[in-house]
Length: 503
Image (tube, rainbow, N blue to C red):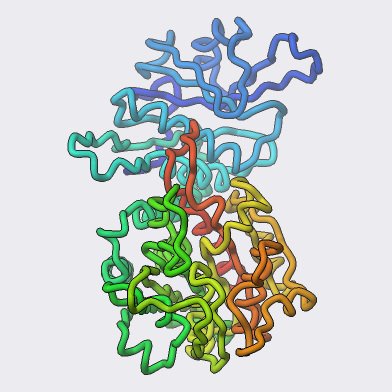
């Protein structure tokens, strides 16, 4: 999608579809009261074109509510689409992001390939933030997961034009650039997650990451089994040993030449391209979605793509530990003891708790490469889905400053995370009689916390943030603003966390 900024007055914009955002400013608490709709565009011609539908009371400007007008009077646009932002005079980037996605997804099935939006002038929403939200939402709305349909038709939007006044031009231009970079990075992560396990093996994931790094000027190394053995990554290797597909250790480095002395950020992602559960085999129901078990790794690859373009002045090392978790005569067994790269011994209680094993060695390796601050992302536990549902992802941290930096960025990213504890009282649940620790708590209680406590063993005192995205990495039902399928969760939030350390 080509996204451009124009200064054309909305009334004279020649476009297939002109999109205007609207709010309900009524203060009445009576549900039967007629809505008072305000268009977030200072243009009398627009108000005149929409007068009949606004005065009818049919359009209430609920979030992502739409109404379409053909041949709107007084406008050069062929169609006028009103998109609601909700009630009140204020709006947020999050609401606007969804509204922009709604407009794109409204246009796509109708065969419209170009559309124009007006930059809304909303209370508390600066032009740069608004333009960024529109670009992010539009990119997210343009993605569809129907990659392998034999009769697939390309319904992607070719061009999005944003109309802004001269006073907002520079801010809006900066916002569009950021939003486009972040939206495309999120979509790249979604493309990777959407690939089936037979087409995106660990080797192919490494190739796709390396291709991205070449395109955007990052350094990339992709290592195989020999390197893992050399590094003594026993935890990572134990997961891979049951599969015919070799593992891949993907290392992406962003190291700007003008970086001042300071922190080195380690981004570590779980890249299990298919997860059967291993010998602790999962049930058949829903197993086809286990291709998404590399969503944490995809988030790190997408984040590195955005970082390469946004160029924050801080060194970043992205690591993805990729493998298949398969049952076979070579697969590890419950009861096995594995030695991690750190030297810790791990009793395997459940082979389906494999993500924490690959992350353990990935976190250790990031520290060995010089990372002073760590963040990881993984579709790690069903227990996190049980705790938070499919609305919030889980976030854990051993360091208040690292967590507060992450939390502060959520206002920009619009992604929803809820903090869960990593307190020492939980550690006894991973104590083993035969090894240093075991890979599960042995019961159903506190599973997401137990997984985080396991990872904490390998970060030690290094400031660290852990993201358990299992419940939100896959969208179960199509929304007005985004397609069913991979969400690309955490890309934007990880990037904001990284940028918080830039000098």
